[in-house]
Image (cartoon, rainbow, N blue to C red; front, side, top):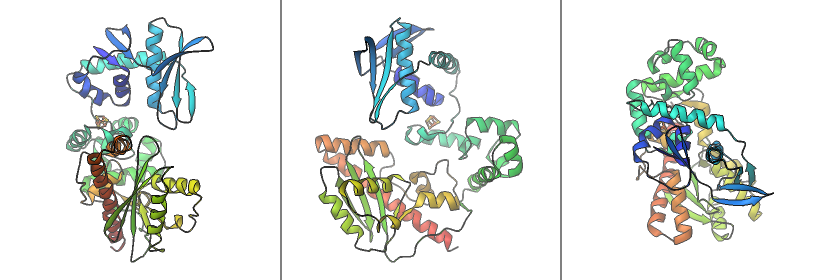
Length: 388
Ligand code: SF4
């Protein structure tokens, strides 16, 4: 069996996903070595001499080195080592470069686990994590876990905690929803607040409804803005804004400032109206553009209301992840294209930058508009909870 660098990294991130994909592996070329009955295939973006030593470069477009990159480069190093090559591996990322410390033991151990996993007749159970949001098997995994009332459905319960809870007798969502938070705090070794949140999360899932934990505080206003940003893999941004039920969009980059000023003008139409968004990214991007363009945002930024923080502080939702998609869907909102996600949005914007692909752009605009409309649905739902 062939194990490519990418496939190995997928296995490291989720054993189940790799198991489900293992029969679709296609032969590929690269730097190869045989190991324990597998053919390992590694890749590098460049090979060059540095200080008299052969250096293999992995180039990645993220700002920082992620765990995924460390695993990819460790795998590459492992293969080079097996081939008897005295080489070093370096990751080049947007903010710099990093030499990788060889982790041969980890790679070798993971290959043993992989062998064992693939010998089983059925795939491992889902174990939810950040990467699930973009995974093609997400719905399938969610359905399976819901059917089995699996503890991994609970936000705040990872593999380690799940094992401890099962050992303590809390085998499913139902049993955890009736648990005493003091006991959970003691068994799992977490604070009482965290234990309370896990038990509430289980209750909310069991009853399929949100639980209000704190009064929702939202500003009063006759007008409101709903704001959502998409970014490509370089430095092009799409700003979406819903105001008075009309969607507007603005294309921004370091070279195009006209739309930035149109955007600011539109936000000044109702100078006291709140600007709702979800999580930090949108506000961070605003601040970045404010700084580069030397625009004074001190009257604008206090109007930003982060609905992610609002919901996390005030409501326990019957969802595994508190992404805008999961939360707004729970309040009945549906995106026009249910298969389009953040990654597709990034690629569509990138395609627009390179090829002026209008059909990709239209799909992206629909998605961005739906994000803005989902924010409105969420805000209205929170406001009605506030009013009882
Ligand atoms: S949804 Fe999550 S648990 Fe399921 S296969 Fe994908 S990454 Fe793994």
